[in-house]
Picture 1 (cartoon, rainbow, N blue to C red):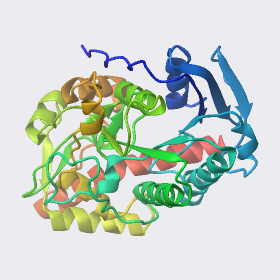
Picture 2: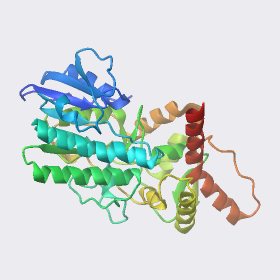
Picture 3: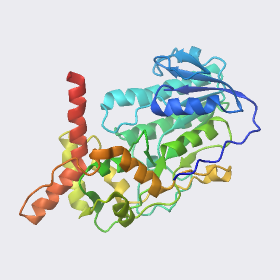
Picture 4: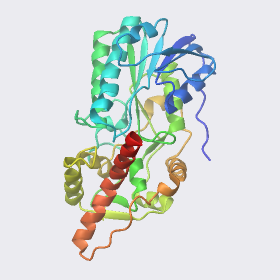
Length: 363
């Protein structure tokens, strides 16, 4: 059983806190937590339609609309959660929300006199490299590529935050960078791999599986919103799981594939539009990007979940989807079988999700 994180410390003057994307899974949970916090004078929920959480002042707005400034009147802190964390979303639409929306929120906050903005990105902005220290420090350099992937969106959001901090010193921008999020909201590549029939493993590499449970992310965002800790902040379960430990928990066996085969196959799938992300995303499976939540821990916060329990709970939530996304391939040639299995493991989830998206659009 998971143990709840330590409560937020009191002692700061009451603030008016606005949450964008307040009707989403993450926003809804955060506004509910903030409504009951002693240090909060008022909670403002900002979304394109009103939510149903009592005790929240609802203001309708699209974060891409420059008129957002008027919706931030009287607000001390903005927690920006109106972003799209789906790796397989339409690139143009996702970037409009993530990049243009974040730019608008930062500009509106500065114009409205907001003193604190909390932005949620991902620890993937650090990049995955065999030379990365384990764990990474909160202020480690960001080495991920500023491409058109979801990780690229987060890199650009971080750049916009840095520009705002330099241009408007009165605005304190706090970056929150979680490990792979699992729970009611799951993002990034690693959680999706559990929908394939086998776990992908890159030959001659050592996987470091680390997760951030949804509950702990909400808790960390609350601490950041209340000014209990300064950023940048990493959030995740303590330590990591080895490939063998993940196999034991999931009941899935690993398919070990040479790096050249895995990357070449993934790149071909990306080039023909099957995979939403380039092959470079596989670096996050092959190389470490473990974080230590150092600043949060120094402030008194602690994760309520460990990696093992978080993964077990996530697999339970997948139900029949866990390990059953594609039938087993029957091939005689070992090389072709390995290549086919790599295609299955890397591309199956993307194909299934694309088909589901088409059915939703046309159904």
